[in-house]
Length: 161
Image (tube, rainbow, N blue to C red):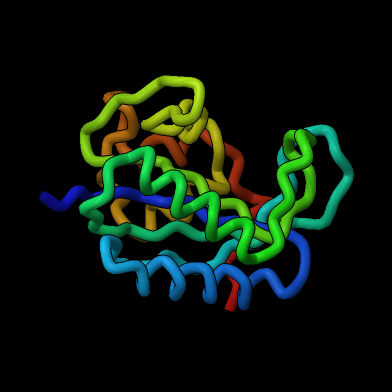
C-alpha cells in the first residue's frame, strides 16, 4: 500500500541548491519512494539564535510504501550521505536537513518522530514550498496552507530563479 508524504528540505552550507537537487534524485532512486512533485527553491532567513547564512528551502511530495519510521531512516541516511553531522546543536547551519512533515493521515508522536511536524504551521520556510505542492492542504486539522501563510510574515523569503 502506498502513502502520500510531504518532505521538507533545507540547507545553508555548500552549494545548497545542488545538494537539495541531488538529495531529491537520491530519494527518487529508492525502490520504495516515488517523488511526485517538487516545489520551487526559496531563500529564507535562518531560524533560531545561531548566527548563520540564509537557508535554501524546498518541499517534495512522495508516494512511499515504507512505514513512517523506515522512511525517516532513509531521510537520515540521505542527510549523512550529503555531509550532515548531527552534533546536538539545534537550529545550527547544515548541509542538508530533511523533515518528514506529513505521512498520509498518520499522527505519530514518539521519541524519534513527530508527524504531522509539530511546528510547520508557524514556519514560512515550510509553508511556502508546501503551498507550491498543495495550497489547499489542511495542516494538522487547522487551516489550509494558504490561509496559514496569510498569518505569517513572508517578506524575507524569496523565490530563487
